Amino acid sequence: MDYIIYFAITIGILVFVHEFGHFIAAKACGMRAEVFAIGFGKRLFGWNKISGFSFGDLPKDFDGQGHTDYRLSLLPLGGYVKISGMVDESFDTEFANKEPQPYEFRARPTWQKIIVITAGVIMNLLLALLVFWGTNFFHGKEITNTTTIGYVLPNSTADSLGFEANDKILSINGKSVKNWDQVQTDIYLNTIGQNLKFKVERASNVLTIAVPRTKIPPSDSKQTFLIPTGIKPGVNEVLPKSPASVAGINTGDLLLKLDNVPLYSREQTTQIITSHKNVTLPLVVLRGKDTVNIAVTPGADGMIGVGLVDAFTGPVIYEKFGFFQSFYYGWQDVVKITDLTFSLAGKVIGGKVAFGKVFGGPVKIAQFAVRSADNGILSFIYFLAMLSLSLAIINILPFPVLDGGHLVMIIIEGVTKREIPIKVKIAIQNVGFVILMLLMAFIIYNDIINL
Image (tube, rainbow, N blue to C red):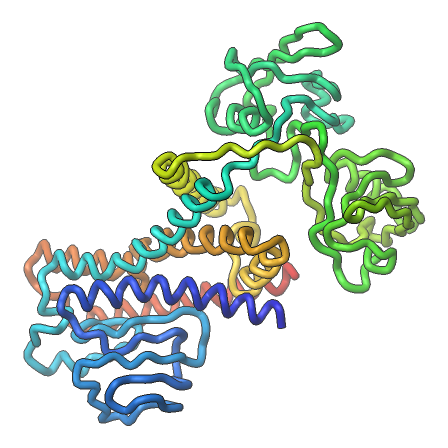
């Protein structure tokens, strides 16, 4: 029920924000919005000024007289605003046999059509920017206040390059670093395409470690390059009836020792577990303020059924930003996430990353919504912002049915000064709709097999 409820809340908010953009823009441009729907397909219930509140479909000859029917429909996978005189998701073409009316979409100038069709994307973008701004302004940025390496996994990339535990990173390519956030930014963003030179302090000696760019694992890789001091593997998910569940491991536990070995990272923890199949291991966890001793037995597959994250337990400081500075950093977040989205999509197309690792449907959205909600309201709101930005990026793509597809046709009509025939628009919409439904089915399939 948690999955269903949070999925409904998440999709409901995002669809409402997106469609409200189209709706308010159409009204502002003098167009009629006949339907404001959350969901697709059969009308479950709704309200309008003519017939009031009612269940089921409206009569086929229903005349809204310019008023909007606000409705909830059967399939909760999106929504739409039906604007008079526009070929959209409803595939209604009755208006084609009549003279264009001043309140219809087709009768308005190109610039108004562009405003209306892009308003949904703009609203999703504004929602993301507002959340990022609010996070920066009210909450500030959490900074990992250390530059010291806590652990180096044996035989890892960092080990082969000469890094050791307790090395304090002083600078990267001549630029001094004061916290781990700067270390990460200099490794993965500020020096893209460059080889690196780390200056580290080790036992009162200053050393230089040269790192070829090709040796650095990608930021989205499962392999962690450098691990700061204070990191502990934390449990963010426990599978039902798994060895971890049987042992009494709980979500939120920090793993301190396994097989009497102090733990410093997910990779180290996984390495110990996979090398002890069907062997009972003593485990020490931190649960709240209490240290708990338990035992866990990895299965024959070398797994215990937990999701692990790197939890930082060291010193943290919060950097506060001013009103306008928060907008700047919020916009920077939008740019970074957009760039990452297209980068990951490119890797999927190039066959470097599995489709299911990047794209998710209703099941994955529900999973992440529940996890983020479990971490608090701020985490859930931030997840909404990320999803809202993703929705904006996807919707502006020049694909039939999506806003970007409509935008392309509007621009073509504006340039040629001729309307594309209704039959052609319907054909394009039908093809796009079928492809979109097939893609959605494939994404849902991927969600299910990855459960």
